[in-house]
Amino acid sequence: MRALVLWAGFALVLMVLPLIFDSVLGVSILNQMAIAIVFALSYNLLLGQGGMLSFGHAVYFGLGGFLAVHAMLLTETQTLAIPLVLIPLAGGLCGLCAALFIGSFSTGRAGTVFAMISLGVGELLAASSLILVSFFGGESGVSADRTFAPPFFGVDFSQDVQVYFLAAAWLFVSVLGMYLFTRTPAGRLANAVRDNPERARFLGYSAGRVRFISFAVAGFFAGIAGGLFAVNYEILTAGNLNAASSGQVLLMAYIGGLGVFIGPILGAVLLTLINSLLNHYTTLWMLYLGLVFVLTVMFLPRGLTGLLMLHRVPWQQGRLGLLVRPYTLTAIPGAVLVLSLIGLLELSQRETGPFVYLGIPFAPGSAVSWLALLAVAVIAFVALRRTLPGLRAAWAEASAQSPRSMHEGDAP
Image (cartoon, rainbow, N blue to C red; front, side, top):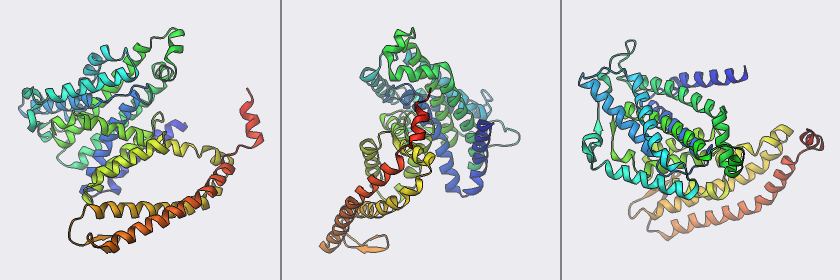
């Protein structure tokens, strides 16, 4: 019953989101989030669940998207009438077929070898997209019109909100399917192969076969994400196959948190907001994204969800209140430090003209502006360093297990 309530709540949230964010920009961002979540979760099946670091996961996303566009073109030319609701499934089947072929010779190896094979295959397909013009369309890509598809119960999907409900339906089905896969024996064995492949072999399981199954399932759902991308944007280009797209999904999964099912969802939402909103305010948004990834790798190797999971013990012990004051004292100088460093970066790429930051005008050529931001950054850094011992002490007190809970944990 608890699981049914959670999934029903998830479906309800998907249904009411367009009512909350009812603007054109809001619905557009929701569509992007739905696509990114399916794509990131499919990558989590590889790296988070199966331990396969792939630098070419965009291959299955792109191939599924290109086949989906061609399926819409067949409908547009009245060669074959395919309902638009089945277009993402066509993309998924294309991604599955590609994963079955590529996985047949790549999943027998793991680690660096598998990563290099995935990178080589990704670059090969990206280069081929500019050569095989009949399928990939060259530099201009392939475009189609989704409104030529047969109406689905009177819906012609001419509006973005109609596309959102289609994407939300496939998002729900995909998330449920990937979650159920992680609960199957194959999904459990993928975790075993990830953690200790030698022991899995000694128990009689083929590590290569287990990786192959996870690889195929991940390719299928990546193809569904590509099909949703084709339906939403009505165009696919070579950029959907290159290493940049593969790196984007890696960032989503890693920043959100690998190994935890909800982690890639959080990462996909966060990076979609960065890509959709931050690039309207600054030209350095890619630099900020890279810094977020580097800091996550250095200080949060388990991602944002890993940070949240660390608070499970204080929450169970009823000691989260002990962390409110130390977190507040640390967050204030930390936020000031981040804002001042951002101000210095933005000021550095302004050559002439006034620069208004947080309502304060700064002059790029003035030494006073530079010294003021630098002084604020230094003061905030010193204040942050002084709050850290108190935070560590509070964290140690809040996360310490009681003798009763330790005794219960040791019980068989």
